[in-house]
Amino acid sequence: MSSSANSGSDGRSNRQPAKRAFAAEFEDASETFQDGDDERSPKFTVLPTGANANRVFVVGTLTETKDVAKGSDSEYWQARVVDRTGTFFVYAGQYQSEAMAVLRSMEAPEYVAVVGKPRSYETDDGDMRVSLTPESVTSVDQATRDRWVVETADQTLDRIEAMETGEGEAGEQARDAYPEANMSEYSQEVKVALAQVARDESKGEGEGE
Amino acid sequence: MVDQCVFSTTATAAATATATTTATASAVLFPPEGCRVEEQFAGQIGPSEANEVVPIMSVQSTSGSIVEQFQTNADIEVDPEDVHERVTTLIDEYQVPEGEARRSVVSHLLDEHEIDRDAFYAQSGSDGNDLVGCGDIEAPEQWVDLEAEVIQLWEPKSDSIAQVGLLADDTGRIKFVSWAASNLPELEEGEAYALSNVVSDKYDGKFSVKLNKTTNIERLDEEIDTADGSESFTSEGALVKIKPGSGLIKRCPEEDCSRVLNDGRCSEHGQVEGEFDMRIKAALDNGQEVESVIFDAEATEAVTGWSLDEATSAAMDALDTTIVAEEFRSQLVGRYFEIEGPEVGEYHLVDEVEESSPDVACEADAARLLDEHFDAEMD
Image 1 (cartoon, rainbow over the protein chains, first blue to last red):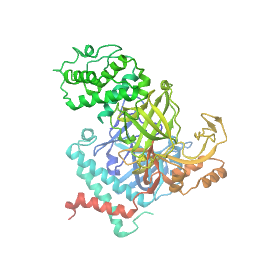
Image 2: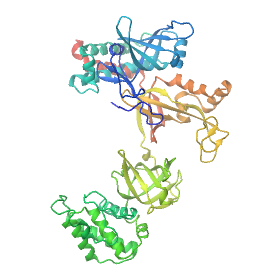
Image 3: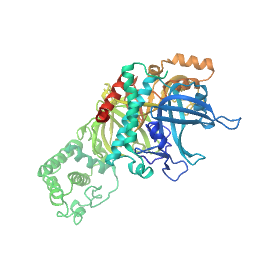
């Protein structure tokens, strides 16, 4: 894992790659850490299958958008983006004005691609929740969604395999953070997600738009 | 290769004016003016301490090439037996690496015959070094000759550097540096040159060549084929970001400038009437690695369907150039692309672009993954 700050401005930047994970795994990824002492050092979320994500890339179906701001003079948009395994909660406020404008104008259902940063927070009930702060939200087609599912399945299966052989990029961190995590459950979720795309083969046009 | 290495050390000696003596075999090592070679090494590297085995052949070839070099470069007959003895002493007795031995002997002879070092080495080059390809340089501190095109010049970051840029030929490309202190003629972008007597260097795992005051520069009339040198390669990933400086941009119209204007200003020529151009700087991300990619106007049109004229008139209508980048953003971000092109500077340049994998392939891939990973559980 790169320990450099994500401050690269141009060219071969130090930009952190966007990890791929299904919602079922992302929902469980409540453990975070900061790589460095600087306030601006990149923050990472530990994915249970053993990867540290400073950023994620998600493609799924937008099923709902709403302004959940409590006050009336500002907006805070919540979007639900679902894949076969669960839901990504996407929140855009004044600092994500571009993404917010897109969410405001979108109408569910629609396939969307979201690039964003994972954030975890504790609810009033003391539960840990993981959400996504978007850098961009764009409308995409079903082929892109299918492509994302296959890619995410591939990378998740690789991580699970590496976990099992103890070679993962962040396997130890993940095991410490989520001692209860069960790799075969995540593996089953991958299977469910893949089945959706593979089934489209026989069905022609899938569900959704 | 042997000749090349051997030559390297002699030329380095000339380039480095002051003498340093260090006992380690790999360090810079040659005698100060007028010093006897034997005295320099005596007591520093004992034969028993060195474990490098040098074949006899190299003594002969080193001696022979030194004699030859003095004949060619200075028209001086040096005593072959004397040369042979000195080389033998250094290599056999003191186990000094061949290159160092050569450097010592040449240095000694230069002093003995009162030969001007710069003039002597300026004669070298073409017949002293191997002509190598930019992509074939795989070791530092080799003195070589290149025939290459200057495909790019960068702004030097230090006053001590006169020019810095990229050289290319049909084997690859390599960065070059020309030092201000060397006072060499300026190289021009897009021109091909024969560069004799440049020395390779390695920094951060990457090779470069340094021009120096002994480097001979000759402009070539023939075109250098840099097609293969561009090393076109393919990358695939999701386009996750379109960076600032994308869309409709204006470039400085001054000759040989073409810098991108910032608020109508060129960093070199100040306020100018810019010329429209179109490009996309983006991040292509495969989940493991992120690559900076750049689409020129042609590639931008190929991927967006917008020609420069359309982009210009759309911006005119909106009285706002930023709508072009916004349009590109909403079109492209989140989609998967396969791009092909060379690496230029820090960017992967897009020559060819295609949206990756139509859904047919995805379905097959999904089925394959299911089969590979879940076959046992599916029955």
